[in-house]
Length: 382
Ligand SMILES: [Zn+2]
Ligand SMILES: [Zn+2]
Image (cartoon, rainbow, N blue to C red; front, top):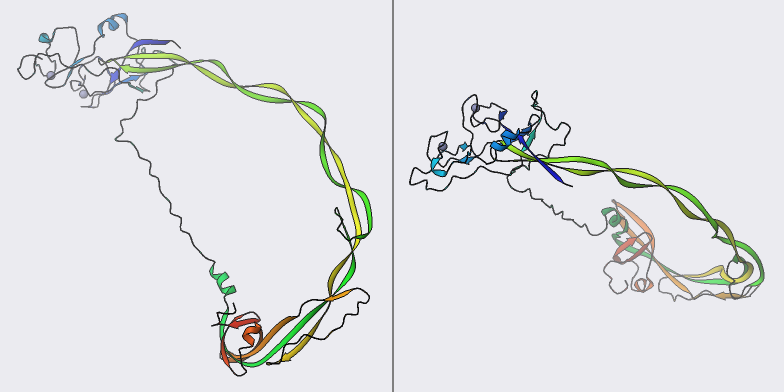
């Protein structure tokens, strides 16, 4: 994109008295006669007209800055020995301290701000043109990002409620009774009907039939579908401009055309597959199998230290085959203890190894959990 440059008139505001919108090349405030210096800020306004060819020929050099008072003076091309400051009336080479060098030039090339709303009759240029972005702000220092490190506090363990629920009661109880039970489960092998996609070994009276187990997708062809597809198309250009100071109250406005894009749509044809659901068949079995299940449980009960013998039973295998499971010993104690200022009595089961070490009338410390207890100070039978 080719760039186009043109010279335009800038303006400045008097920092001394506040008088605004002074034409750029004007050296002094028309109200208070303050002489502009290096720091004065030029700006572009809506009435920043194009320079005439005569003005362009006149404002080719930046102002020079007085070595004594800092005022800006127009450079008319004189040699350094002839430069006299209009503000403080100092020659630029007339003193030993000032030396014989040329004074410095005013700043050139800094981007100037655009100030709107100061349009004046007859001075408007480039109406509708895009204004340059505002100059970068002279902020003090870079903003630093503060990364706040959050410290996650891990809370270990279970909640209070769960602790309460599972924590055992500690009670001191006097043992008032010791009883035991030995259970033997009698099982029988019964014919049970079952069904499924797999046939268990040992099944009999087997019946097979084909049954739909699932479905699968089968492609039968294709179809087409029209879809809208978006894309970016260049639909024109727009002018982008920026203005820099020439250091003498006029500016260089540089513009270029940048492309403008618009979202457009086109229709595309897409091929998509078409499926149908097809049933998948498999063999479904119904059968009979013999399974062991509980027929009854026989028990033998006793008290104290009497031998914990299994109950007597016979297997008659009628009408089905029978078998017995290994005997299971369960030991119980009844304890008397004080709770809420009342004497209570409860029966609990406890490990038979602990049962064997207890005596009637003995007071022991127990951990109670539901209807089970164990000796609180016991470490051997955990
Ligand atoms: Zn002024
Ligand atoms: Zn001066």
